[in-house]
Length: 309
Image (cartoon, rainbow, N blue to C red; front, side):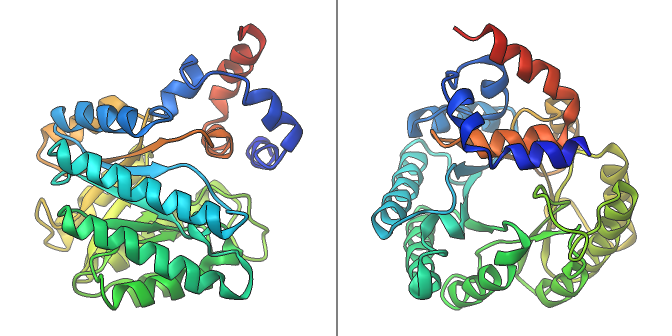
């Protein structure tokens, strides 16, 4: 119930105005968000890479309202990719892009606009010798996002996909995506979805995650195991062994600020561990979803609101 409330709060414009007066450097925000500028994103990436971790940068923003804004976000990605190239970090750092941030929802031409913009980012990434992963959003966008992915992969087959295990459809999507060269991030899912399309009980989501994980690890693609759940991390390791997976043929992914000790532990064991690092001024919806995933952080968040100055 608390998770559903927090997910709903993520859409509250009134609370967003209140919370957004907090500086991005405040303790609760800085824990999950690397900063607002490309320079801060690159700095955070360097610190993680120096700790033997990989990175996926996300320029925060979604549901773009007009074409100019979509182009602005596209250029922000092109810029940060170039900054990463100049910093010598693209061998270990990629970018994650939300289709809705680059035009997907802009009417009848939205998908085409998003395809063109994602292609531009992918071209910049390829020139810099890195990759792009196309993020997944709420269930109403899945078909459109997968359509955009298929089109983009015609020219940039290295583009990563994302599957959210809590959706009923996700096992089928995993079967479709588990082919040679296909990079697929498997996460539980962070949006508040109706029971008609998604599992709601934690145990059901976990079981769905394992079923999807088996499909991806048994296939010839490159699974990206995105979870902070200790038990699922152990299951993923056991399944990787069962299916003859060697280090470098799959990776773990965790969020910036979530279980950093576990990230380092896995990396010290020779596992590839990638940290999803968000940055930018539009951090409110992202932060609310992180709190929804870890309601224990709610007290810290509320104290930050009361004591901000």
